[in-house]
Length: 523
Image (cartoon, rainbow, N blue to C red; front, side):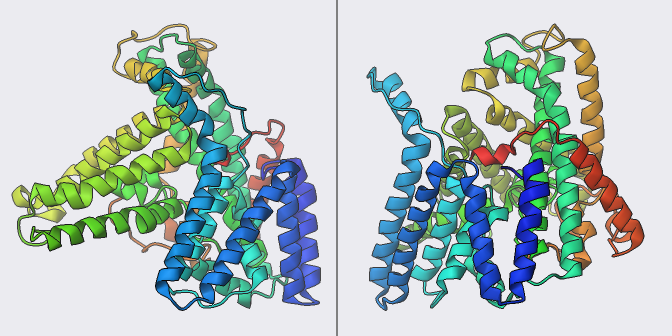
């Protein structure tokens, strides 16, 4: 059962909302346990065989969390955290990476290990990281106590259980403790807007262009050459498919949670408007970026900086920063973090290459930010002058890297990239022919305009606080082709907006005849 299905929208969701609102009249606790039960049912509907795995993970981590809360010694808490990390990541690695590692070993060492193909448990990466954030906060002394039912809902809450966002204790636990889960017209209205827009993005926009993108990548997977026009159409088309697929899911998740009075953190903020790869990663899968920054990059960078300081070497301070300091404190942690980001996204060399490409680009971006003021000190003039070029370079980097993200292998992605630079000619018979190519380019123009010109739905809903946190009204470092449009399109709870939302929802529902999973559910 997935968000974009008749079963979810017309059976599961109405029953869950009705039960929640009715039980909330009895007590908030009763409504909360109802949501926990509904979330477990939602997960079991995919494959009930993996429900014990989810429950076992929750029980194990809860026992560790309780023990950590009751321990005063920081060293003991650290050892408990390390033990939990080994167990949790070991379980994740077994299900997600066993086949990949054994295949890599067989190739590298000429061995012949065999393994039983495992079905990846739905959402295992997300609920594993979710619980590790909580344990890390307890270990650091930021959490002193919590209720078991809050812990259960924190992990299993169905809007974010499968594909995020990865939430923090400080964002969710206070809401669970204060929420009354009663019917609230404002919450229901804002939730419906988010759900409707997200469903439309997924079913009408992402899935429609996917019909034309998939044959191009299938051709590359077969080892057949992909000429230039098809390669660019496939690469840009998939970038837009991924954009609307993930933004659609993120908005549906926000909307479903808001219906019962819970706000999730923003996970997606118009990343294709970014003017640098650094800014792109602050807008794309925001909660994963902050998780990797907080628990991988920062600890590594701090440790390396302290090591340099103890050795009497310069750090990242002063008018002129040495390249040795930059490489040791910024470049190495960035490359390691993005390598792990690629590994997290999938068990395949193509995902590792995706991560490394972004890692290299981030290092170059950070280096440029350091050296640029030396010969172009006027920052305002620099930004005005280079804005179009900065956007184009960022978009091209994202597009090329996502080619390997979608490709069946490194070789298949390489075939697409070879086509991008014209090594396979300009045009040729790929997929269903040139007619489909024209339609695909038409979709690209339309979707690029939607992604780049209007404000995103969270900006339109800003006055209603659709997420736990919202960025500044005029964020820097982004393409802004329609300045002020968000203010003019600001949502109001009026008949006109209700009618518009209903129409968007109807169109989305009419497109459900071809159910497909959200791309991020595979991770």
